[in-house]
Picture 1 (tube, one colour):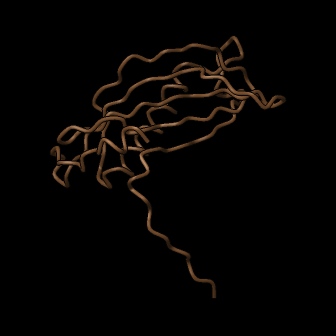
Picture 2 (cartoon, one colour):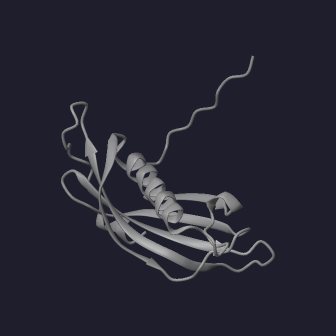
Picture 3 (cartoon, rainbow, N blue to C red):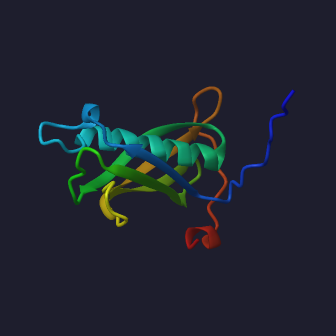
Length: 140
């Protein structure tokens, strides 16, 4: 019988990384990643990052400016990097960057970025305090 290996998660790590492949089902009529799909992936990365930070139920309350700098062609690999950059009493501001990596090259390019404000909720759906982000973690 195998035993599950368990290790504590370092909450001080404010960063979450996710990767996807841009398949035909997630593209628009230009054969590039559909903007709505990009935004959904970014919101998902922000959600996971904020949830790991506070270990509570989390909801998106605000999406700031999203910059689409470069088109992301079908067949590319994208990596999303989400970081908690600010905390309020019950809120966490998460910056999400999406990088595009052509499969046939080793370079990557910042394609899209945005800011998401997430709020932690208690079991009754009311905002609840989160652990503040320390200055040392902001610069990490």
